[in-house]
Image (tube, rainbow, N blue to C red; front, top):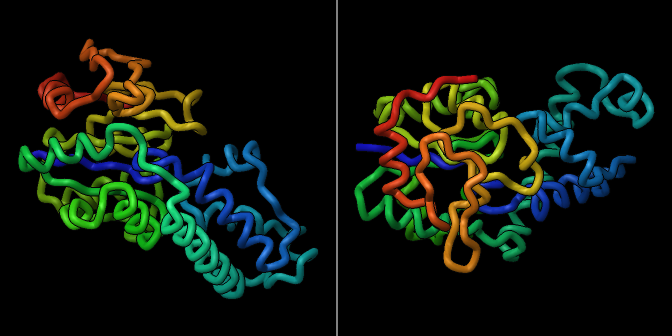
Length: 261
């Protein structure tokens, strides 16, 4: 049975700008850290896979000494865990407050996949609690119950390593040529391609200028009547006409194998 695997942040909703960035900054304020990431700062941090890992990038020798933070590995691990727990709480609250509407076409495509009997999953580097909160908010609890969720530290290496997709393939018991991935970033695309998976990219506010060589289709979104999808790179000449559909995904699966760039 084919499977459709979504990334979370930037794919299900524009969570980076309206959720993660404010949650990081509220956490820094809560712990009285002299850090406030601007949108430009955060765009650079997004090159690092995983929220905990982005926070860890602060822990330079100079920053640690200036802010009285532990210098040993065990102490820093404890500090990062506390920061990340707080950040997840701030983020989850933002999701529950409805600050991040779902991206166009997501629910429509999910309904098409459910009707056709496809398996559904989310594979993300974010914390599992955050991913489940976004999924339920965007698609509703009834649809969310049909998803497998692979998130956070379930694998040792974050995207662009293929680990999380390889784990998903094993757990879903599907072959790579039976899977479509929907991603929004270059790191996510590289992770999916390295696992041998055909990938559709829906660019987000932070990723539009990234390199998406190897994607089967690059679009502005999955599209709906109010906000039609624009095809930005269509090597298979799918011509989605405003909405990316399950039939487009079937055509991608039937096409020749996607190679990593």
